[in-house]
Length: 153
Image (cartoon, rainbow, N blue to C red; front, side, top):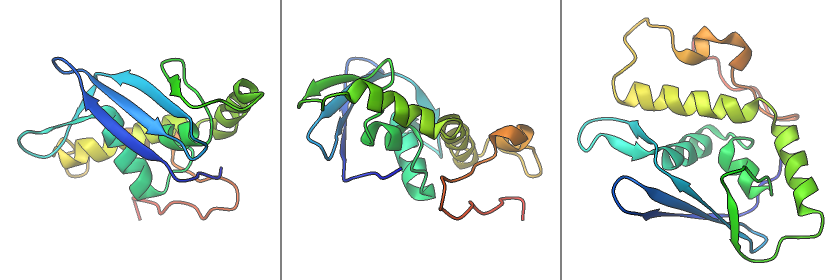
């Protein structure tokens, strides 16, 4: 899945709420509200979940995770176009993008959790990580991309 340039903003709202805003390469701006946080490292020890996703997906080259799907035109129920003009047949294209990504969206979710847990010291030495406990959710890349390295190797 090709992904063009994108800019992401995280806007702090009241309390523990935040809003994520994606500026896509086609000029469309997509926004969604977030509230979940991941524990990482020491104090302050928390990171907005959507920011954790962005970092993990970018660092691991996951092009069909949450942010890659949004950048390519996919839309999730909680996302709203707030600026720009969607292309004709954008709804159909968005569904196709999500269908093409398939299980890789959930794999990005699992990997984000594993990375955050590891950073927080929540994974004990020798403990099975959630991805290892669910072989069907093992990470893989899209067609033509090399496989991810096996963390057990």
